[in-house]
Image 1 (spheres, protein in one colour):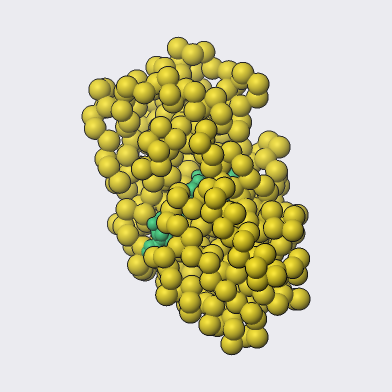
Image 2 (cartoon, rainbow, N blue to C red; image 1 turned 180 degrees about the vertical axis):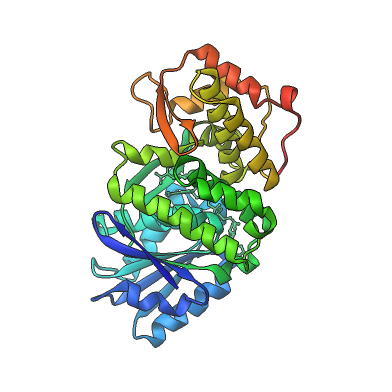
Length: 365
Ligand SMILES: NC(=O)c1ccc[n+]([C@@H]2O[C@H](COP(=O)([O-])OP(=O)(O)OC[C@H]3O[C@@H](n4cnc5c(N)ncnc54)[C@H](O)[C@@H]3O)[C@@H](O)[C@H]2O)c1
Ligand SMILES: O=C(O)C(=O)C[C@@H](O)[C@H](O)[C@H](O)COP(=O)(O)O
Ligand SMILES: [Zn+2]
């Protein structure tokens, strides 16, 4: 097993390996009596096995079944979880486990951040996307009718257990969606990620391959470095949002019928085109975005008829300051910078560059 350390408001390890679920108890640390495992129905059997392990270890353990995917990131579901915690008498020395994909770990982190103003959370990601991104770094949150992740808190986990064996049951489309965040780490900070994928795209999407394991470790290392330097996103952490201004707008407009990773994939091509149109990035690097994402089966185009709605959603991005839209763009691979207040004509021109009219229909994930 590999341990990657994050130093934020606390220091914790992201443990990467196989067959790790039995390692959960040591991550909880001292003083925990009650544990609530939050998981979607798809992971009910795993959640029950984790609960039984915890009971055998002397904990009072409960499972809270939460809705699948983005349906769980709501105020109502958070309130349902607070209800379980209240009825079972969870105190400040008790803990929550988030077992599932990024939606579940975002919710579990948010519930942990808000219950009694903050209790321990251990994240047990079971999708590629959650392993390399959502479960690490302490961004927690839920959506509102107006947009994605608009309510949340920074609340670091006390540990993250990334058991690669759990990926064996993950549908291929979800695995591929997770690769979008891996590619993001390649473009913003670790070009070796891009080289590894380009050399062997099949292995990159194979949960049992050493290539995927190396990609997970490299992407987690990028995130750990960035979050350790800037937990609260005062500056550097914004680079982890590469592709998300446009990506989150797609998710909102499509009412979360698009996977997050698929939306981020198109969002990165949008950001690359925007940088090129602003004279900051070469055509060659833009085309490298298209080729590597297409190689993995990720979408790079989007419908042409929703610009006003996308623009409205992008205005609610957390990087916006007042009326100033701000984007993370690249000057080259591994050289992220900010593009502040780009001319509206550039924003629209970049939209045309990812449009289906010019580039053909989106791969649907
Ligand atoms: N907090 C952060 O820093 C951060 C970073 C990236 C993404 N996110 C958030 O993460 C979410 C996306 O996460 P995701 O892509 O993991 O999606 P997800 O949580 O919706 O999971 C995808 C699907 O896989 C199922 N699933 C999970 N593990 C499984 C397994 N091992 N076997 C079979 N099915 C399994 C889930 O039930 C769901 O249907 C979004 O809400 C996004 O905003 C947060
Ligand atoms: O960890 C971060 O910081 C990120 O931006 C990682 C993103 O991949 C992730 O989707 C995050 O939830 C987006 O955050 P938001 O602040 O734009 O809601
Ligand atoms: Zn993301």
